[in-house]
Structure formats: C-alpha cells, structure tokens
Image (cartoon, rainbow, N blue to C red; front, side, top):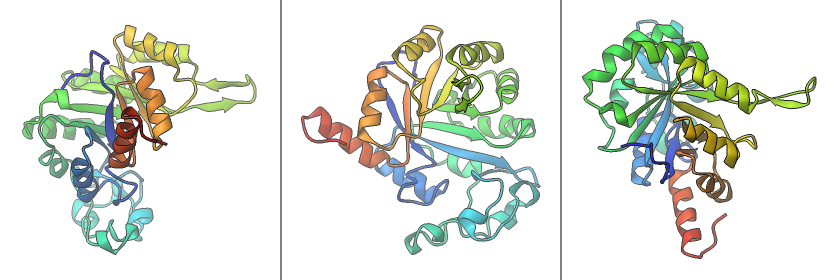
Length: 263
C-alpha cells in the first residue's frame, strides 16, 4: 500500500477501535478490522526483559488497576494484568499484547502505525522483530515525538518510513503557536523524517498540507472523532485520519457522500 499519490485519505483506528473496546488490545484491533479500518495505530514500550509491548502510559494503573512501571516489569508480570475489564465486563481478560502478537494478526494490505514511547533502546528489538513477521515495510509506519529518535530510526531502519509526531503549545510571550509551520518543515528536513503526524489543529491548513506534500512528506492527523472534522481533513488531502471510532466515522462519511446526514 502506498500513500504517495494523496488521492485517498485512510481511516486509522487510534489505539484500535478504542471508543468502544479497551485501547491497545487485540480486541480493539480486531474490532477495528471488523469495522473496516484501513489501519491501526498503537503505542509500544520496552519491558525490563527487552520485550516490546503495546502500552500507552509509562505505568499500567489507568487501564489495569495495578500500577506497574512498564520499563521495570517483565513481560510475564505485565501479561498477568487484566487491561480489558476497565472498559466493561465484556472485555474482561484482555492482556497487554506484544508487538509480535499484533503483527502476526495484521490483515493483508492494512496499515500499522507503530508509535514508540521508549527511547533509542527500542531500536534494536524493532530491528530484530519487524523482519521476522514478514509484514511488508510498505504497510508499516513508525511514529515518535522525539526528533532525535526519528533521526536514529531513519539511520538504523532505513527501509521503513518514519514520521514525527507534533503537538502544539500556545506561547504567551510570542502570542503564537509553537512549533510554527516553518519550524516543523525545517525539523522534518533536518532529521530526514518521511512525514508529519500532527495533532488536530488549525495550523494544519490547506497551504501547509500542500507544502508538505510538495516536499514529499506524508501528512497524518490525530485524533478526529467527528464527521465534520474528518470531512475537513479529507478535503485538505491528508494521507490518514486517526480516530477512536473508525466504524462510526466511516458510516457517517459514507452517509454524507450519499446526501444523508453526517455529523
């Protein structure tokens, strides 16, 4: 699958179909596939014993009710936790999956956005795991907020496209958003990133998206849960929209296209 023509905006399930199912679990990913998502996005951290596991927070308290530090826990300790029950008894018994467990279930042709929450120590495990599963590199994207980690990923995993995650802060001193569009463009070029994974924000306008595409960069936006927002970004031609509710959003967009109501 390629995103180079910018003719189709893909719907990517943010942490799986996480509006309904427990985030970053196999159940959330399987629900996303059933709902017709074009891909999934998930967060990964390195355990004490060097395993790459699917977990957003640095600790497990929010989703497991037992507060372990992921980097200080073993895979066995982490997989004893129930990370489904907090979302409802229907999901009881869901465990923290490994990267391998997610990869082997990736359907043919579907995209997988791997957001890295650890530092450069996660690169070597990735280098060993990703080729073993046989998933074509074109279906994979690596994401990180750390610009230096993005640069190192590009150096050490040259066959995989890597995008920089960016969120924005308002500066009272300059009365402007930071980073600026110019700063983002310069940073992407400096670190050799293949694209921008941007927070849903007004800075991401038609001119900026067109400029990024003209520079050969992909543009992905998170997290969009309204049909109005998704329709806006499709109009801008972004490569993908990350959403917590892929099935609902796809249905609303299809209704809007056919003249029905979609909000």
